[in-house]
Image 1 (cartoon, helix red, strand yellow):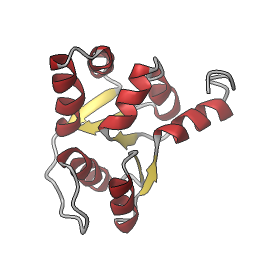
Image 2 (cartoon, rainbow, N blue to C red; image 1 turned 30 degrees about the vertical axis):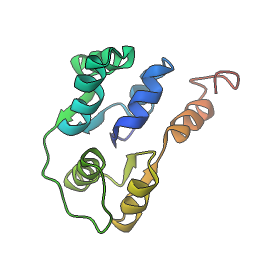
Image 3 (cartoon, helix red, strand yellow; image 1 turned 90 degrees about the vertical axis):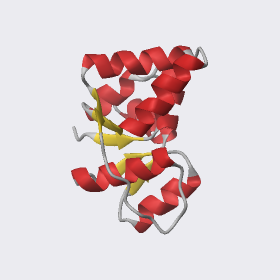
Image 4 (cartoon, rainbow, N blue to C red; image 1 turned 30 degrees about the horizontal axis):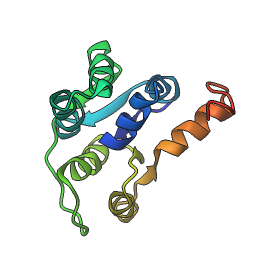
Length: 136
């Protein structure tokens, strides 16, 4: 089981569908930059989003770990969360990230990082029988 760095969108989608636990099952430990925590938890709570509390609980439980990181420059203009995810993956030496946005996926490939998306998590969970085909 290898840890992974995640952007906001996979966390939000999985939490909204009560599937955030799949990240712990598949990767053990998930890292997010502070910028992603702010986007998902702080802004989500301000908007009254239930998924913000689910993600916050995963952080409190310790398997979703928040780290500070300096933003590395990329050749593609990215949102701050996406840029910090790529920077964190590089700093930690991770070869994969969870990100759904096309621009960030392209930037990841240019940086030698394999981008994975939310559907990858669900496919993997189906493959290892963590969810059924109906749940998929």
